[in-house]
Amino acid sequence: MKDTVILVVTGSVAAFKAAQLARRLMERGLLVKVAMTTAAERFITPLTFEALTGQPVLRAGFPQPGEAPMEHINFSRGARLVVIAPATANTMGKLAHGVADDSVLSMLLASGLPVMVAPAMNTQMYKHPAVQSNINTLAGRGVTFIGPSSGSLACGEEGEGKMEDAEVIAAAVMEKLGGEKDLAGVRLLVTTGGCQEPIDPVRYIGNRSSGKMGVAVAQVAAGRGAEVVLVAAHMETGLPEGMRVVRAHTAMEMQEAVRKEFAQCDILVMAAAVADYQVENPATGKVKKKNSMRLDLVETPDILAGVAMEKGGRVVVGFAAETEDHLASGRKKLMSKNLDLIVINDVSRGDIGFGSDYNEVTLLTRDGKKIEIARASKDMVAGEVLDQAATIWRDSRTVEQPEAS
Image (spheres, one colour):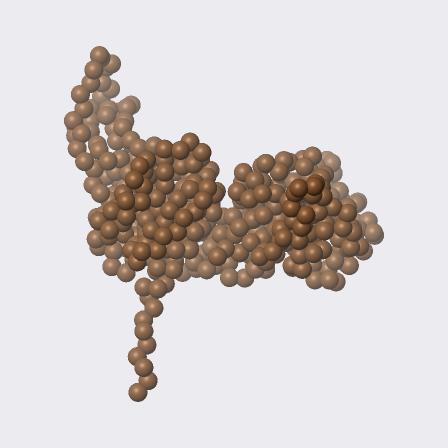
């Protein structure tokens, strides 16, 4: 079960940083639920956060007849922490004086959760005695403040009042929560992207893949403390920072890279779309266009099955992109390839899978466990895949202690 964090966004030009913060928190394996003041919606839309988090946004207006009347009470249930970022002088003042004149402030007062605040405002406003008094009041009640930092402000002035960077806030949140490094000491090998097999120096055949799912797995794992190596084929998304990346464009290159890195890993997550065939004799020069072209194709090596047969105590996770008979096909691959876990997704749909930031998958394990994940962000799917893979890995290392004589 993932920890849930409430991210409250208030009416500051720094609201765009809250979108970055939501992403950083999700990369660390957290479930993020966003609440927005009315003023915040003038800077960034609720749709942005719903798209990023896959969760509905709590808006400031009170419920209309027919809507859930207690959402300001229910919204924070199950969460562990509230983060207000950016936090304006107005919101901090209201919170300090117990004002509950909209659903967001009512939620804050009713949540009973620890609160972290990342202020953002003009320097003189921040230094005003009234604002400092409110900050002291909140700090006296146990509210944790992150920043602000000094720098160039939106008003053009230089000074204290700048909202801290998303990465700094995310690190502070994880430290507050504790246990953020649940994958510390785990060595993870992830493959991603689509292999491209050359026909000639300018043409190729390959499998569709944006690389987003593998990148999500790698980033979420790194955020949870794992040592990650990413083997990347052709990508339609950026390569992540903070980990070693090995490029492998063809199936043979990927096989070589995976075999080289596999010996040092604890868990392999094979999310890459490896081409099933390669041209037997690629042309060394560009083939001139003509009415037809005959290609002699040969099978590429089954990288996943090959390493899984030699896995020893390692956990091997595969992906199955299917268009029909999803579960039957996935279960067959799970057993025939000697996998510990397989992630099955329907690639016939346009709203998930290829190129999308969302996925809807079914996870199957060798011991018969079946976990269905409804349409969610790929970060959230990645977190669940890692949860299951880490559980299998830890369970495999649990040795029964002999009974005392």
